[in-house]
Amino acid sequence: MITGKDRIQGMILVLSASMCWGTTGTLQALAPAGAPPLTVGAIRILLSGVILLAWCGWKNRGFDFLRRVKPFALLIGVTGMMGFQFSFFTALRLTGVSIGTMIAIGASPIAAGALGALAEREPLSPRWALSTGVAILGCALLVLGGSSGNISLHWGGVGLSFLAAFCYAVMGLGLKQQGTVLPATEATAVTTGAAIAVGLPVLLLLDSSWIFSPRGAVIAFTLGFATMAFPMSLFTFGLKKIFLRDAYTISLAEPLTACILSAVVLGERLSTVSLAGAGLIFLGILLLPASEEKESGSDSAGDTCKGE
Image 1 (cartoon, one colour):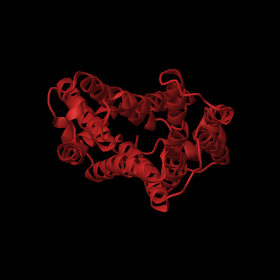
Image 2 (cartoon, rainbow, N blue to C red):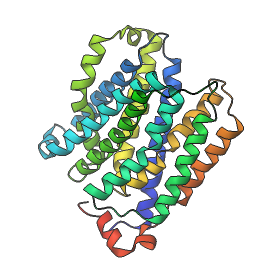
Image 3 (tube, one colour):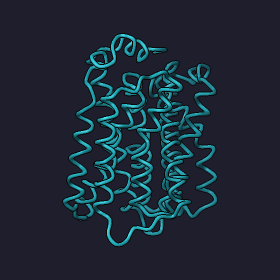
Image 4 (cartoon, rainbow, N blue to C red):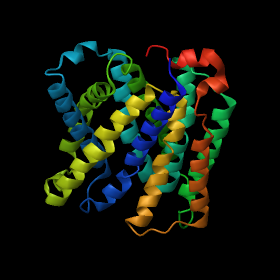
């Protein structure tokens, strides 16, 4: 049975993963000029898959764990992972960084809540709705508060942003289901490893020469390890201990981290509205219950432990 202590550990793991993901934008900005955004996403996938598969093969003295892979969960995880990469970066190009990020990241807790309820029978509690609503509002203020000039909507980009949010949640569902038969690191390794089949052609078709410069190589490795392999393992392990819906509310710490880093490292100034948004995201995460049993009762707790 998942205890309150286990749940807090899961929340900390997901929060840590989200903070690692929040460094991606800053690292991309530090990459050599002219690096195509799609290659940034592709190299993250490729290197993380190689790193995790090599680590798991060494740790297990072989790849026998691959025999326990759930094919359908693998398909779901890879589809969500690569679908997010491509739809998100394309959305940003069409409708702008502010709107694209706000929709893709802000809508993901709602998509995760719906998927968790349908696929995992996770209850949607009033307190989750309150905490998620507060955090989403904070995300909107954080992102839009730092935008400058007129904001124009490109409906194709808006649609792709919502698709990215859905794919982001689908990825988590695949990882959560894979984690019922494999340890967290192995579950992440097989998912990112399989995604190499999609990411590698992108690197071959687009200009990836930036990766082979000294600066580009350092940035590429950091992207693969610090923003993908390591945090994805933390995220998958955390999913074993908390609901899918809560994980994506906590993951709104990603844009919060990104904005703080952009201010500290890149010298970008946060507006008063953005600072208020940051506070609301933090408040929304704090509103999540530390013990789900207190809110949802023993039935919900039983559902939390289903298959784990």
